[in-house]
Image (cartoon, rainbow, N blue to C red; front, side, top):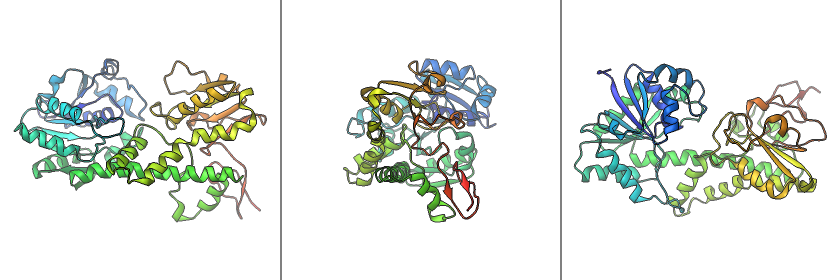
Length: 411
């Protein structure tokens, strides 16, 4: 143990901190402490239980828990850490401007407990310029602490596979901090890319905003097709097939969760609302539940029971933060006779079993969980599948070609 690098992760029992901590603890190089304020999650982690879904992680957690990894609420663990990783995001006000007092409080609370010559890594999404504020705070206090910003870019649920494979971005104001942060991540990943700290902060917001805009494009096309009586997915499959320039064209569907919308809006706030594409993407993506209600109105919603299948913000996930399925639920409560919601992964006392939800006359897919893939519905059911998840009408090609989940036929 004495030769291992001691790492403390602030916010260590959450979706960003815990997977990273488990991967580090499974390496021969590290002894890891997950610092958190949630006593329930702390107890779960120390018992070797994942508090949320993350593919492949729980067996590794069981192996490292109470050995090379422990969770605690005691901030004293900061005092002996060689490396402190903060996954706490930038606190912002209702206009998404950074709360400087909270940033300073968190920075002061951390650096005053860290030992000299330790490395502080900012891993969460940061409002542009926050790393410089923390750097200035360290210098003002005359502390010998090395600071780097190393944004996380992992797809939730895929950390075990992506942490070793994805290049790690590293930004620092001083060469020694850059060197140390680079060497730290080279122990667990293949490639390290060095940029300026402001570029690291700005780039993370740009990447998430790009994805949000990408989904907004698909959703806008879906809405347009629906309004003109066209099947978006027939067009999607036909024009995407063996056409390389449309290979990355995403399907339509709810675009939500704790990152994409927030980071897009932070970029809007940072640019004094000059990021007009981001504002328009918000309008498109957030309006999708309203559009579904609008399209269902001719079916006399007031006389029907409606079920939403899947309440997580995306498929095969148990995270309901900012899920548009809940926005849809609240709208349906106004218009429908009764609303059933179900999800095999999300912990929510108000959810009903799938069997009960399937009794509804109108079925809406809220999250494309794999467990729903083989469901079949009687013809009298009204089924809304914005995601293109279930089999649809046939598309004719000059040969039989399996594409997506469509049934293909030959001429």
